[in-house]
Amino acid sequence: MDAGPARAVETDVVRAGGRPAEQLARLLGRAGNGAQAARHLAEARDALMHYCGLQSCRHAKGPPRAMDRRTYRHSFLLPDGSVRLVWELEHDTGPGGELVRAVFTDRGELALAEWAADAAFGPPLPPRTVPGADGTGAFAGLALDGVRGLSEPPEPPDDPLPSAPPPYAERPGRRRAYTEAGSPEHARRLLRRAANTNPPGEDVRGRLHAAVAHTIGIVTRRSTRIAGRTVSWSLYEHAFLLPDGSELSLWEIDHTRTPNGNPVCEVYASRDAALDTAVRRIEAG
Image 1 (spheres, one colour):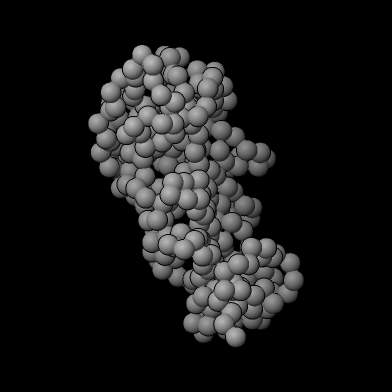
Image 2 (cartoon, rainbow, N blue to C red):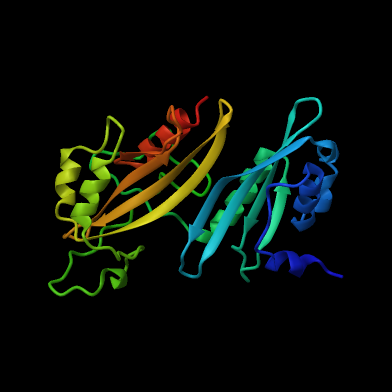
């Protein structure tokens, strides 16, 4: 009997609880490359404990259709006190939308597989930063869990809004749909809750007073173990449409790298600055 289709339609997967050997068997059984990976995981069958956490994910509502990519990190505590890490990649980005799962024991191979899956989401939106940001920071061109092409040049701006514009989501040539109203108030509340000491300045705040629409999208989400506890962070883009047809984005990092583990929000004027915070400071340790 061909087990492939059964794995493809499986949506309710239990990744926690049970004996470690049973979790490993289920993990390998639902992965398309499970038989090959099993040859490198013989010692994990004797694991004393198992823990699974979501490491990163990417979602798209379309077009052309809704797609998802998730990466799970499985940790197996071995009898000698060491930990064996196994990564599970799950996505439905293929032409037919079939759910595909694979397991990896090498970080490099995992990264290549993630980038291949993320290619189906299409090229990312170019950076939308305040004047003076040159896009040549430490993360220009970095591929990080679906955040790709940071150094791509922006497209020429659209023509100014006509006197009777069509709905924001239907403007010809736009690469994103603007569906949210109350944009100046949204920008004010976002900047008010920013906990960082270097949020966007008054020039950006002044431009956002005239915003006519906005949209919010998640760029990436990650988690890692630091000092014995799980620390997670998410990057959101808040894109604002201005009256002259130009666009301006604020980049929000929500993270739990705090003394008590409570989540906080930080807001930056560029994607490079937000990623620098996430990777160099939040994940440092």
